[in-house]
Image (cartoon, rainbow, N blue to C red; front, side, top):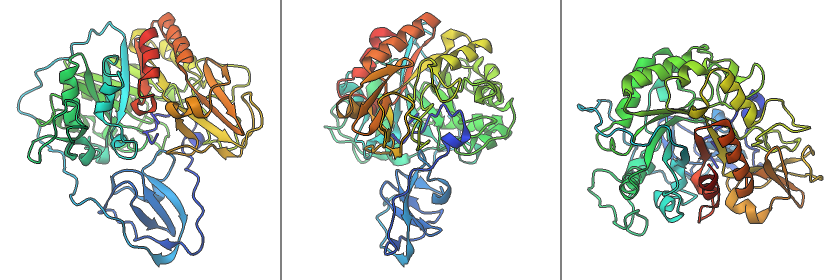
Length: 488
């Protein structure tokens, strides 16, 4: 989740809500078309390419992802509007091509086993690989914010699933970017010839400073879940490729396991999967067989608590039986992907009078998982460190109409908590979460107070802890993660 350009870890209850594109930026007839997109070219944040008479702007590193089919809210391309037949000069692409992850498995298995007590509460936060670009959020910030000492696990998002295999998502951010002494966790600058740089090396340094921390490599997410359909056709080959990636000798000590963020098995997200109800369990089983019992295996899943919804069309329980923990994405239930509203909190803990869709709340998802035999101790409650909002709203209470998504720093209809807390302070609560009405904008997000309430719910339900999307949305002193830590 987000999530932010996430990922999006959508609760994803309905296809139409999940697959809506970002509103396009109108372009005049004079706007020239950028150079045509090609599948072999590498594009980075800010690069512009044209396809089918539209210009598209890359949000982060990409290759072989068609702009016309990858320009929804959480996808890599943003539709910049209609263009005419002229051309504009190309923007500068990276000078080096991404490095391909090796396909040969290590000759020796990992020697370090997870040491976190499986019976203790987990506090898990996502680190988004693309945050090192426009957001300027680096691994060092996990330390300086005070978050590293509070976390038990970090989910590094994301690896890709191209061709039904685990592959590197962004080689530059992951292991090529050189860090200065000021940017580095331990104050030591990278050298040109060291074998590992980037966020992977910074995570290694963070783990050295905080030995209790575990790092899990998350695969898929909203944008990169399409390859899971092919993975389901050959789970063993997929598991082998994931093991080769996670246990690559250059960074095998960095990662303590793998996380599967498939959006969604036997259902629709950015794309639709029809691999059958057993596919999820088959993939997880193959991963457990390959990774063994000493590695952590987790999974982010739908939090659709409605009858006949996403949690009912795949055999999640059989797959979860092989996991260490499961992360139902209890956020993104409602938002400006439904541009006209009605306004509703994107992460309600419980149902409330007037909720737009029955079953779209955290408690409904938790109870559905329990009814399927999933132990409460395996389930973590999800928290969004961001808000979703509308503009053109005339009433403070939930349920109002809107004209579109409210302006956000990075995405229309989405804003970080650290911005919203002062830009549009909370004015009420509903369903166990907060909302805010300021001017003609309406936002919903969690605050330290509502997080405390959610953590109390989690304790009463016997849940295994909490997780959140994602670290850069918090304040520089970690207000939200502190609220989780103090109450989990």
